[in-house]
Amino acid sequence: MTAGTRARQTSANALLRAQRTKAGTRNALQKLAARIEKKIGATGFQSILETIDKEIGGTPIARRTTQYVNGAPPLAAENAVRAASLRARILAGALSSDQAGTYINRSRPIVNKMAKMGALLAIADGRSLRFPKWQFADNTEDGLIPGLHDVLGVMDASPFRKAAWFITKNPALEDRAPVDVLLAGEIRRVVKEAKSLVGF
Image (cartoon, rainbow, N blue to C red; front, top):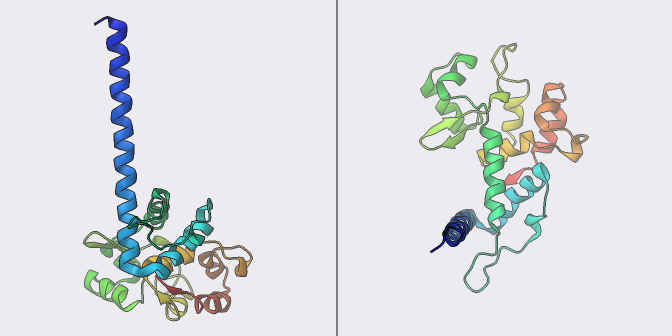
């Protein structure tokens, strides 16, 4: 076998391995999307996809059917990738329970209990809770941004859905993210919009 033939064969093998890896990743993401959809239902899945569409644009995946065709999930791997991207954005700079406690002067058990009760926004990350940092403030008496309790109190959705809503631009708020509107002091407007948030 000549050097040129060996080089071509090596390149072909490398390409084949790359294709198999890509296919494996795509299949894994499709299975992940299917498991998420099965767990929360079609309505819940579409709800979170609508949030993802608003946040990072792209193909209007939320409008696609979520019914299975010939036993296979029709959701493209990009759906799971987009969901992961939004989750990464939500968790960027997030605080641990101990770190959150320093803002509100509470112990870790109390902080976790507040999250469970919905008084603080926390996202499960493995066995730990992560608290989006934007909900905390250095210059308020309770260590939280003004109006946070009012808004969380009227929301009916999962922590992830709430967090995604807070940082996604909203047409009803002049294309501003609700958290920015809260920081501007327009608490009543955000509370009014938050009442319509339901689902996953």
